[in-house]
Length: 127
Image (cartoon, rainbow, N blue to C red):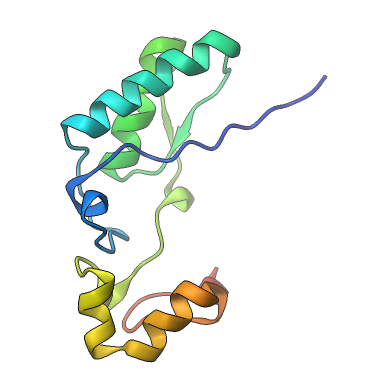
């Protein structure tokens, strides 16, 4: 038997529409994001029958997963370890806004994120 794992990114929020560091901010899906989540759910059940559905507890991810679960007939299981990285002082800022205060760190984040230490937040090495 083959197990297939689908990783689905949440639908659009206002913060990722304008590219703000979201991290653990509980930003909800916007109208377009809800349409994307429903379209994803419809598409998934066209080619497979999922047997389990896991989500971050963050509203944007949970709303996306619940929309998919509605089409797949599944209840979402929340898993706290699926929560986004803690962006610390960058949370809510655009990359340009963060670059004003931390130019080297922002540049490193976009070139080699595994090496960046976010001010007041996490690094991938923390995981």
